Amino acid sequence: MSFRLRARQAGISPATLDATFSEAGFIPGVITRDGTQLQTRRTLEEYLSIATSDERLTKGRAAIARHSKTLTAIEAKFGVDARIVTAIWGMESQFGEKRGQIPVISSTATLAFDGRRADFYETQLLAALRILDRGDTTPQQLTGSWAGAMGHTQFIPTSYQSFAVDFTGDGRRDIWSNDPTDALASTANYLAQNGWRSGLKWGAEAGTGGPSGRTIQPQSGGVRFTVTRNFNVIKTYNNSDFYAIAVGHLADRIGGAGPLQGRFPPDANGLTKNDRIAIQRGLAARGYDVGTIDGVMGTKTETAISDFQRRQGLTATGIATVEILAALL
Image 1 (tube, rainbow, N blue to C red):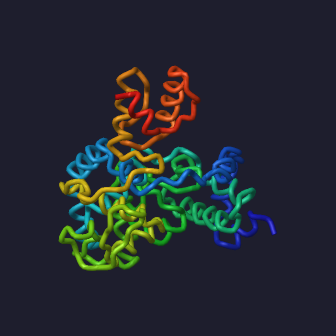
Image 2 (image 1 turned 135 degrees about the horizontal axis):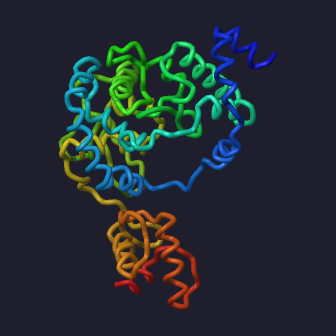
Image 3 (image 1 turned 90 degrees about the vertical axis):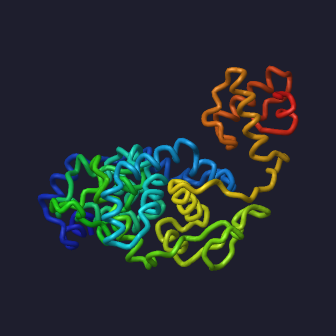
């Protein structure tokens, strides 16, 4: 059975199919991304360094202040902490700056045709077509990430169908426009419908007087956290302890809390976060572009280390070591 026939049987109108697929096309880059999406695993320390960078905190505090009236109204209606909603917004799209510009119909159709999870993406494609059938947006505005996640808080089409709300009252559940209101309200609704308990914190660093709950230590030898049922609700958005801790900690930091009090162990090369920051600063002082100075050894830092090693007559590995630290001090 052809997809068009399956779509018609699913209730999609001929007009929507004609208008949509006249502009859709196969995107080879999406298949490439799908095949290479497994990335080098970051430690929790590195993950949190990125998630709660100075830049993200500054933007997050500005965003929550700029949209305080809207976020207060959303919290009042759905019972979800406005800081948690804001933190998810920051994690998913850098507070709306990186919403994705790939046509969702084309990306999900490509993955349904030639991806690892064809059935899943055909379901997403049908859900995206229903969005257009309902008139919430246009094919030109229906854009997102390479995998079809959309809008300010990166809803996949089926999540949109289940949880998106029209909080502005204009008759459309618009999570794509510059106005984040519907997207933020939809995220709060998502969390509320998945069991968020109003007034209960997600958790806290263990031993700091947070709520009672179970204790986890996602990085061996690192900081321990006490987490509540709301931590598990955040994980329904992204099933990762790292993600849920990052959302909770980012929310706390946006709200004015300080950094974690505990420490993480040195990395496999014997370097602490402060050591890695010192390496980045030493390289930057010598004119290298290391990107954000945050102790995370990304591509720019690795490239800089390799060049520095070559200039020192060493084998260019790009790996931060105690020896590199000593040479830069």
